[in-house]
Image 1 (cartoon, helix red, strand yellow):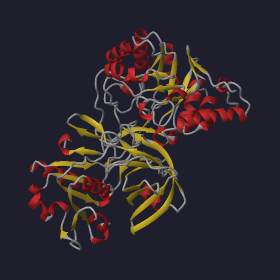
Image 2 (spheres, rainbow over the protein chains, first blue to last red):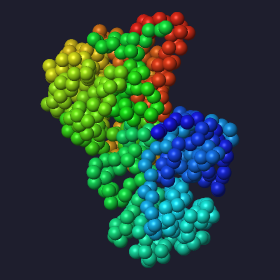
Image 3 (cartoon, one colour):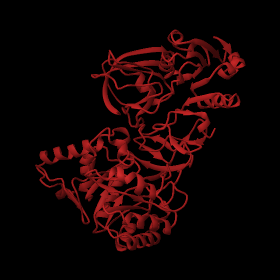
Image 4 (cartoon, helix red, strand yellow):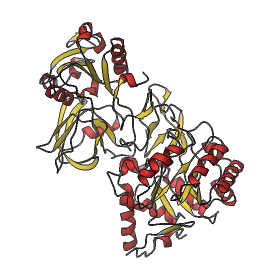
Length: 254
Length: 303
């Protein structure tokens, strides 16, 4: 069930100048959350940040009653969030959206770019529990933008590309040598910038491999009322907030 | 006990707080957040004769104290509403008001005739003010003659309460209001969104796929309030006021300006419980200011 929940900022962990993880504590046990689910965080402290901001859940702890988000500062809303103080009240609506499908006993390639890595640790955890093998491929501009490698390694092998070659293979995720062995994978999951997901979706189709993408469409509400976040599918326009954010690329008009 | 009941034409609302069309889905989207039976009414998502996919993404741009939308009346058509959605929502103890749209008058009439047959629906909102469709929509509502023509046609096709939703994108909204009153409207609802646009300076491209869209939110409140007051002074039929209402104080202001009931729109996106909070806030205001009947506030601004 969707809930509006007042939380308190428990911890703010900066990973670099513009990337941080906020951990919120709530007075009750969190609702069940699966990888890909998101929350709408209220940030309306100024007139020019009017709407809530949607973020994929990065982690949830049902014992400590906490929920965490991996956030990259890209605009005024994320900037305001980065300035929250410990103990400050934060209102969220959650859990929203669908989740990645969790397939058993298969080999998966999980690709993240930029803030798109947010739901992928939770996904790796779920896939590992199902007996599936996870290979992560993380891409960024430079080494400084590659985060949480140790945490990813808990659930699978981690491959890296950076555009300047400062870490891992040089280039974009689609340039990595792992693509030479792509036929050994049964499924691709990805979340990141649209052009990256489009490129991956195209390769997946060419190799006839199942591929799920998590879209980051702009939305006003997050729960199916505004109809602003649609993506074109072979079955008409679908809301990324209620029928996504996770879609199988074969259903999208990409 | 305060008396929250208001009348709009023959209908009695249990309170003046209703949800605006296009911001509340078909109510079901909000069932996790509130008891929908508490609402005065729900204006459900705009309906057309056939399935409409709406406009391409992107359809939304956040703006200071508001947002632009360019949804373009995405809906599965009036038959789907009547046969599939309405049976799921009709048990709620609140008024359900369909919002009627069309590209041509014949479409408006056909949608209306179908809704006229649904016994427990007591009113429709005729939308001649949607700014986001290429044909029809606002085109009917920004011209007095066409507003009258479509209202007369729908009046003939509809036996129950006819509410006409007005566009603010006009030179003089009172002329249109008087026109639709003369054409048989039982009430008017105002305002729909203001035509606006947003540009991404970095890419030099429009943010919305349609370039222009409808502006809503508290940014438009003072203009909407002024229009409600002007229309209140120009017509005798009741007004359902809206435009950037975020809280109970805003709602009271719209009633003082002449609204018999109000609609809450964009605020639902930010706080899905806002309608309930506004109802509670109105009760508190009445107790504090010794107002026994909310209807005493309609048009009660003291000049």
